Amino acid sequence: MHYLDNAATTKPSVACVKAVNHALCENFGNPSSLYRLGIDAEKAINEARENIAAVLGCDMGEIYFTSCATESSNTVIFGAAENFGKRKKKAVTTTVEHPSVAHCFDKLEKAGFEVVRISPDEKGEIKAEEIISAVDENTFLVSCMLVNNETGYILPVSEAFKRIKKKYPECITHCDGVQGFLKIPFKVKSLYADCISLSGHKVHASKGVGALYVKKGVRIAPYIIGGGQEKNFRSGTECVPLISGFGATVKELSLTIDERYKQALELKKYLAEKLESCKGIKLNSKENSSPYIVSVGVENIKAETLLHYLEAREIYVSSGSACSKGKRSSVLESFRIPGKYLDSTIRVSFCEFNTKEDIDALVTEIKKAQNNLAKIKK
Image (cartoon, rainbow, N blue to C red):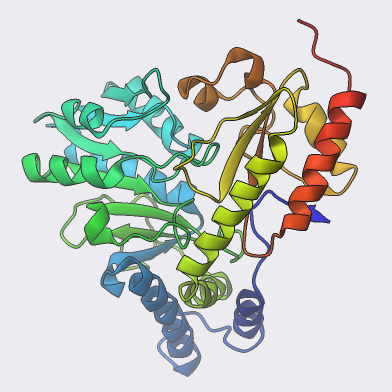
């Protein structure tokens, strides 16, 4: 099997599985309980909180656990709107955000908020100045992802957020850090983000767990209310097994960020070199994008058709975002990808378990597909 869809999900690490099993079988207490079993479960949660905080360079009290990054982003966007919506009615984002962010802003717009969406320029670049100039005294929130999940494009988050916070300190800055966390080195101070959304299953933890960084003093209304867990910010009994697994894999991967980055960069370069011999191929990802994600356009072959052709040969890639489920990508349109590639683009995404042999298998089968598959009618 050649698994090259790590931007969709990753295989849980041994450390994650071990921690999850221990919490399920041994450390099964309710972390809100006051006796030993509960206290031990709470300790496990706080250990995971400490591990994530150490990577981000923040206080553990600024980390809250959620069910996924989608919940984290929803919490920030709607919580900020609830707190500021009566006196500030403007929010700024981009046209290349993940649906978990983009659809939130669609809903805000329907509720009467002004939403400004910054698009890439004719070169497919998003300039920090464009984001900054869209912000004014009436803006309560700016939300920009760090790494685009379809192309690997790295947005100028740090530069934009730094200048926005200096001029409009009350404006909340939110970053979807899912595809950058533990891959692209960053700290909360260097990112100038008030809030950062994270996901467990993108970094070799399990599905069903995420985290949210909220800078101390930033006002975000709770999105899920009830028993008052997570310091009254996110109610619901914490899922100790999944949180423990998340914390364990974060601790492990935090030691190899630079090493894994170099490995992914080598794989990206190798893939680009191998595809040079293929006619009708376009690399949509820029040279300075994240090495973990490579967007590849294969002319005249529908992405979904190619995806299943490769699947039959145990090669796994995706057609854009895993959340798009085969629909044409508005993100690729925003990045000015030529029309003939919009329905013909696959996403290849790496992790430390991938090798050049995976790429050799992929390129070999793409070449065969170009000869064997029915072409798209023009």
